[in-house]
Image 1: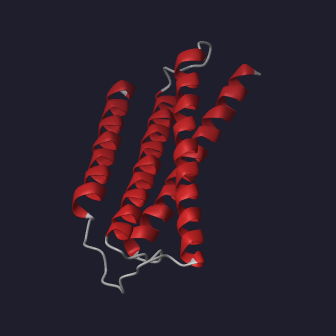
Image 2: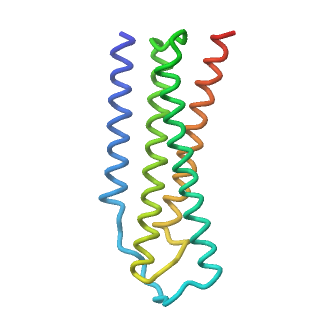
Image 3: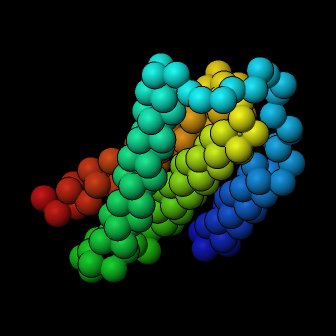
Length: 158
């Protein structure tokens, strides 16, 4: 009974995850808003672009590091009870939100490149601000699940 419930939830989570990723890449892709073409970025725009790219790359790196934590938990914690379906569900949600964080980071970098290729730069456009916010939110949610899992590991060891 518990195994079937876990399988249903896991299937639902992966289906939703695939749906969100497909939606982000293929359907939520309107053309850029018209704006004044620019020849060269001014110093403020260069700083904004550099900051956005650096933050996105940092969050991509940290999200990838969460996969290392998941691997540590799954493959190295032999005395930790991985047969508990709640623990498996937490690990599955950690993976899902980490994947979404990485996905939104790549979408952000792709949209920045697209804007610059079209000789436009507007950091407040929806196609730039939405992936930037969602990348950070998804990383925080994945971090929350990893903290809960880490605390439960520490509680079982003591």
